[in-house]
Length: 499
Image (tube, rainbow, N blue to C red; front, side, top):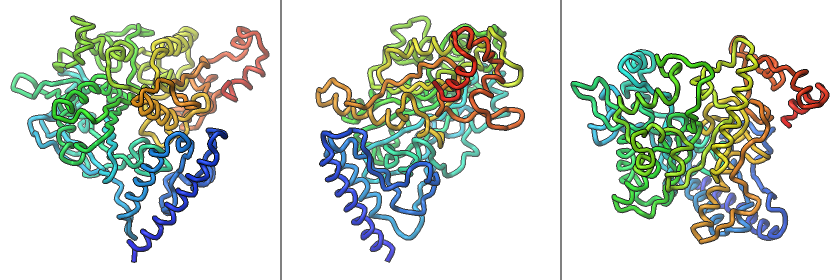
């Protein structure tokens, strides 16, 4: 009975879709932002509620321009509903170890990946996990003792649940929920750049760049050979890994006879600056070491590989290629950059520690200058999303759909970017109308954007609003109001509203 009910249900949903499409066509020439949805509005919807099969967010804004794309969505929806039954759908990604056992984690255990196939979809999302790095025997030994899962596959679980852009639920992941999802655990500690095996001379293997290539080769036999789009995404060290590997993945697919798979990159929280620390400290461990010094030592220790075009541009100083604004101009494939303007990992390596003691005036100036420097490095990046928040990583967070820059959410901006790439392939150079994808906050303080993730006091665990956070950091409202030539209460009002 289950499959029969399911098929009837599919027909009903398709009927709703088609009537919606007709309605959308009638709206042509009207407001491009008009939206139809089978979901209740966001405040009334319980996130993660999967009890009703009707939960499919329908965005008809694209229908007016592209009926083919809409009908593809309809087909994908039908295919995803067809096999359903009374049983709960298995949405987890399952662990697979690499067929090539010589490509390993740091400790020589086999590397691998998690996969959730989406039969019928020709879109693939490969995600590179983050987790800092180590750059000499001492701090790699310490990392092995304290964070073994980042250096060994010996205790990886058999399944993994996708969140954020890896979620298979349309209400949590509006445009990518139906893709084939791949999660590659980070167990090479080399910012996905190494190509050195474990030997009698080398205590650890550093094979990050080779792990990515082996995963891609393995996936070809699981449906990627019929793929149309491959989005290589990653957060933190994984975000930098995207910048270092996106061209190499595309070139590998071309070599293996698959030039029609369009490879793109999505780099989250991996756009680091090689700036001068607020306080210079000795290079003892990953946290205290200045970014440039750590990478210089790391490249030698890992046998790190950088993209050929970047290597030629920075011959003799290849460490430059680990910094977004230096490697980005040499990348050929399209890349979307997501970067908090006040990235916690960047501030940590710059020796700015925000919780605990109130921030001194010199630190406050340093933080504001960091936002200005980051804006400057991003100004020529056509596709990016940069909120003025103090945070780190976003695309796999449950709240990733809630953050906005200038009224546009991150999933919406990514959707606009995809549409622009689709339109450009038809030789149309103009970006889609009313579809922004170069989004950067102008306000100058951490968390001046009201949609930023919640900040919690590290001691009490209490949530803090923007004003409490700024005062906790030593922000002097009276003095700042005087500098801006305004009344303190007006400044507080502007801070509260995120102006």
